[in-house]
Length: 177
Image 1 (tube, helix red, strand yellow):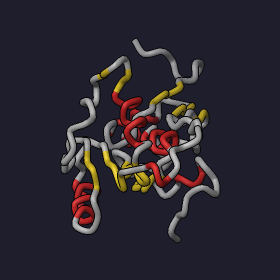
Image 2 (cartoon, one colour):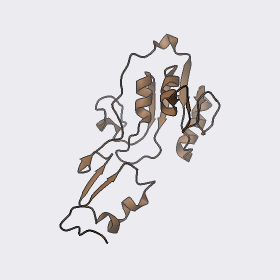
Image 3 (cartoon, rainbow, N blue to C red):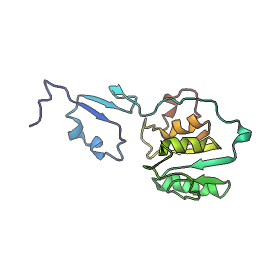
Image 4 (cartoon, rainbow, N blue to C red):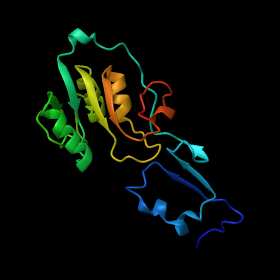
């Protein structure tokens, strides 16, 4: 039996973007909830997945031997084509499933030497001047931890994401008008 929504306000908590959870666009389903908690900054209770970067001292640029790295495995057509075209002009070391040309990183849900994929990816990014940060979907306010991996590594993120990214880190990112 469903609890009464009049006397007990339902709160929806989700950290997924609507592309992966289409029920979030179903008006009848959403009408059950009086309050919303999510990664979205415009919800009743914003709870961003993105954590502030550690901003540890990066390697000096002259010690970085790689130019651009990528490590994503959701080969969405737009970003995969962007990376494919970029690769015709500059060396991009791709460690993920999308256009992989390097094998020096464990699989996404694996670990090595007591470190998980995300920790190993951040360590690897320290050797690169730039890191491609393409979020899984371009949804308003969706910012995931891929951004903090690049920033924690001291690698300049090249981002394909929501146009609201500057609201998470005001003044840090260029947003085309």
